[in-house]
Amino acid sequence: MYILRDENVYLFLEGEPALDYRRRLISAKLSSEADYKKELELVRLHKQQRVEKQKREEETKKLKEQAKYDIMERKHMKADTTKSN
Image (cartoon, rainbow, N blue to C red):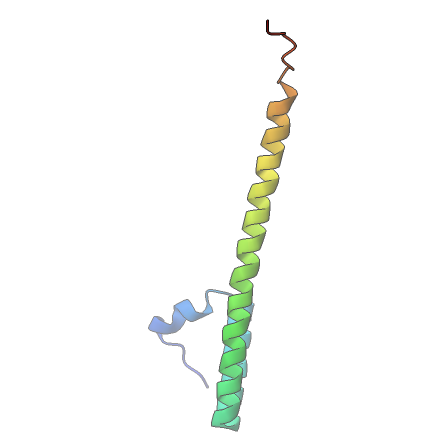
């Protein structure tokens, strides 16, 4: 039986991926120290990839929103047809 201490609750706020990471780490730790180190590196890489993916998605969302506002602004623009002397 595993008891979750209050100071460790933040570890599980990430949701399902955090639970999967913890399960894999515990399993690897029970197997051997080398397996644990490999699994720890994999977990670190997965977390880094998730952060990068989230940043790319946020940037894409901002660019799409900016493009939408640019289109709305161009709708109201009129071409300057005056000639200079």
